[in-house]
Length: 289
Length: 206
Image: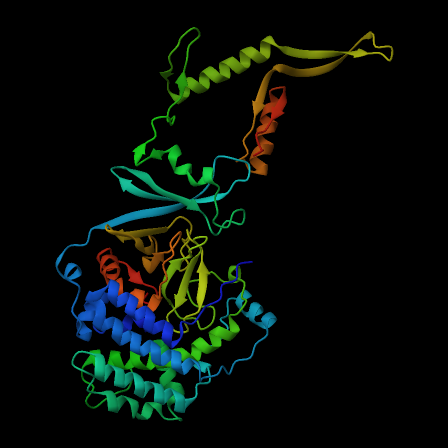
C-alpha cells in the first residue's frame, strides 16, 4: 500500500524556496516574488482556518472506491470573514508587486459578490471557471481573469486544510485518476519521487499530492501505451508528460536519484518554456479540455 | 474554463505560461522570447527485466532516431508490485543489452547466426532458414532416438518380456524461461511433452 503525505512548506519554507528559485532563475524574479508573497499569505491562513467536513477512513475509501471525491467542492463551508480578509491581502500583493499594480483592487475586495449572502454562488462560479458578474469598470477581460484567479487563490487554504486532514493515510492505489481525490480539481504539476520514481502530482486548488501511473494517461480511455513526453534539449530533467490520444499534458520534474527539493507552484513558473513547447505541439494543460 | 494557478499567470487565456508572464507585466526570459525551442520527444514503455526469475518491472524511455526508436534510459517501474521502482545493479544496466555509451551494443544478436559443422565462423541466416533448420534437427534427433516401448521389469529385477508404450525421446532437453508467465510456461512444457521430450527444465533461479 503506497501512502503519500503532503507536507505544507510553511511561511518560512516558502520564503527560503523563493530565494533558492530566484538565485537559480533570476529571469523570473518578479513573478517568483509575487507568487511567493501570495503563497506566504496562504500558508499563514492555513494555520487559522478549519475543515468543516468530517469523514472516517471507511467512508472516505468507500467514496473513492465509487469514484467520488472526498469533498463536494462548491459545498465546502468557507468562513466568509477570513475569506474576504485573504482576498484583500492578495489584492494588496497585486497592487504592490505586479508591474503596473492592480487598479481594481478595492473594487474586488469590497465587491458584493463576496458578501455572506452571495459568497456561495461566487465560489461556484470561480470553481467552475465561469465569468464573474463584474460590470462597470471591468471592461478588460484580463482584469476579470485576474480577479477570478485572486478569488481562486483565496479559496486554496480552506481546501488545503480539508486535504491535509481527509487525505492523510490514503492508499494511493485507490484513485490514480486525472483529478484530485480531495476536491476534484486538475493537477497543477507533478514530479517523480526521489527514492522510487513514483509519479506524484499536486492539486491546483488544495495542493494535495496523489499518485498517477507512469505509463498510462489518467485522462482518457486510450491510456495504455499512449503516454509520451517531451523536453527541451538542455533540460532533460523537466518534461511534459502528455497523452498522444487526448493531447492533455502535465508538466513533471524528474527528481529520481537527485537530492533536489522543489516547490511545484514556483516550479510551474520557471518551466513556462515547457508550456510554450507543449503549445507548439498542440497540447492542452490538464483542466483545459 | 477551469481556473488553475497556471491561469494566474495566463491572463491572456492564450494557453501559454510564458505569454501570461508578459501579460502580468513581467519580462520573458530572453531565450523563450527569441529563440526557437529545441524540443525532444520520447516515449516511456513498460517492460520486464530479462535477467532473472524475479521479473522486475522496468520503464524504458526511447527517442526517435531516424525511423526507429532508440532506448535512452531504463529504470525500475514504481507502479510494478514486484519491485516498486527498484532494480538490482544488473537490472539497472539492462539498457546495455541494446546500447553501451550511446552506441549499439556490438555483442547484441539481432539476427539468427549459424555455424556449420566444422566451421569456425558464424554466418547470418534468415529467420525462416533458422526455424526450418531447428525443426529439421528436432525431427531427426527425435526420430533417431525414439523410445516407443519400455519393457516391464519383474519383482526379481529381470525383464518380464512384457512391453508398455513409452513414446518419448531422451535425446532432447529443453530450458524454459523465467520471464514466462505461468500460462506461457504451461504452453511451453505442453509443446515439449507433445514432442516426447521428458527433460524439461527452467532457469527460474537467481
